[in-house]
Amino acid sequence: MTAAGAAKEDNVKNRGKLLEQLTGVDSSKLNYYVELKKRNQDVLKQNSRLEILQQLTRDMNIDMSIGDIIERAFKKLPEALPCDFLGLAKLSEGKLKLIAVAPREFSTLGFIPKQSVLWDAFRDKGATSYKPADDPLCFAQIAAEHPLTLRSLAAAPLFERSSVNGLLLLGSTLDSAYEGAELNFVQHLADQLAISMQNARLYKQVSRAKKEWEATFKAVTDPIFLVDTDYNVLLHNDRLPPGMAEIWNSSISKKCFARMRGEKEPCRNCPIEEIKETGNPVFQQWNTPQGECLEMSYYPVFNEEKQLSAVTIIMKDVTKKLKMEAQLVQSAKMVALGVMAAGVAHELNSPMTVIIGTAQMLAREMQQDGDPEGAEALSDIINCGLRCKRIIQNLLTFSRQDQVPVASIDLNAEVERVLDMIQYQINRNQIAIFEHFDRDIPMMNANGPQIQQVLTNFLINARDALTDVEGKEKVIEVSTALRVEGERRFAVLSVADNGVGIAKENLSKIFTPFYTSKEASKGTGLGLSVSLGIAESHNGRIEVDTELGQGSCFSLILPIDQP
Image (tube, rainbow, N blue to C red; front, side, top):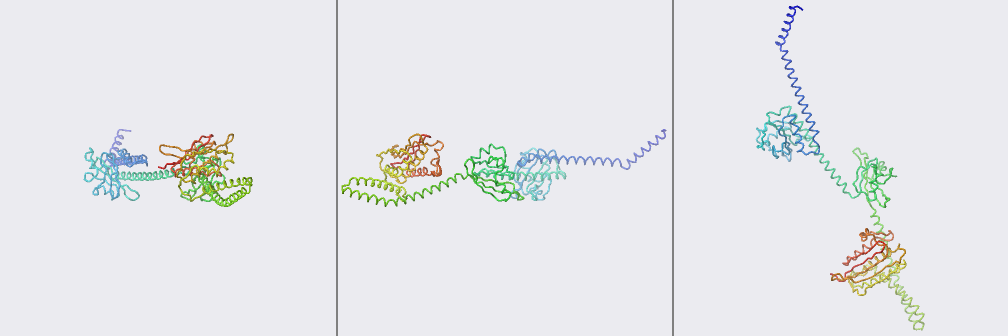
């Protein structure tokens, strides 16, 4: 290219550049790039604020207190916008009360006056900025000794559903720190804090209700289980029957049939299957291999769609109840038998009187007619008749209900009456009875038939303790004695046997009503309990001396000198 051509081209470029300057093209580009850069910065700032808001949301746990939530938010907010103060006020009975601030020493907690401009945000239901200096009632002026002075304040309402129930307050030492974009962020933050506080409150309510329910569930003394429709045990209250505890603890499976019964498959005629079909409760009785009798109640649990989701199983151990019922039936039989025996005794009393009277008349006539051998034979009939009449009389005395409660009695005489009635029953069991009476025991005030009842219980128990004894002579010793304790005298009535004795672990149970080591048909478990009641009603006591395999001695201690 020639020099002229080059010069011509430079002139064209210079004219284009001058034209661009005159038309403002370069100026427009500059403004465009400046605006674009500003928008990018705003977008980045907004994204940063959203990230901080999201991070705050993640950091706020439902189990945090309101103070903890404000503290956590205060540490993060300066990354998003100016924040030298953060506070939260809640509506309580028509008053706004500041309940949390950060930093804590910046302002005291208390009620915000009705005349304060902060109420404008509450009434307008929108975020608003203020100059704290224009509001002499502003809470931020309370801590005037604080080195920082707020120049900007933002207040955003806290919504619960559609109602305002508090305010979120932000303060800065900068002028005009909270404008349109900042106020929008403050409102978003307030909305998020309101949700977090609602979640925390609901969580506490649910947690409290759960704890109350669990406490109630655990407090029920009967075993309770919650089982799903696949037989898995979901919950239980740790109240296992003694016979089930070993199987339950050794089972690895969660299935109810494995943990409760030690089975590998669902039980035959499983109540859960019946509930699946009918949707109705099922009641069963289960006799465990350990000898326990359990009443099983199965109740269906339905979900919101009214579909069966689980089954509640309630167990009730009725072993003692059934045993008690059986013993009461047996006791009723014994009472009926006693009434019948008393009636029979009454019926026998009259003919025995005739037999004895007739035999005595014949004996006198034979004696007068010179037939002493015939009179002697009749004397045996008379003696046996008198013995029978004495037994009948003792039986009537023992069964009489209208007996005077307390009277002066001879303890030895009462013992002899009982032995006359019961000695034959004991002797026919090849048991020898030895008597050791202290004849120096004075007369004492007591209820004779009741003392006879105690002695009868002692003798029957001694007989039963000797039933299975083999290889040695069976002996029962009945004795009375006089005992002096301090300045008081006591009569002691003892019945000792060389039978099986009582184990130490059972010794504390023998006076418990309905406790018995005998078969159901041989005892009611009431004898010693009633005997103890009789002893205590006489201001006395019962002493027991026993050794397993060697025998037992039961002693009724009665005071002769009443205090």
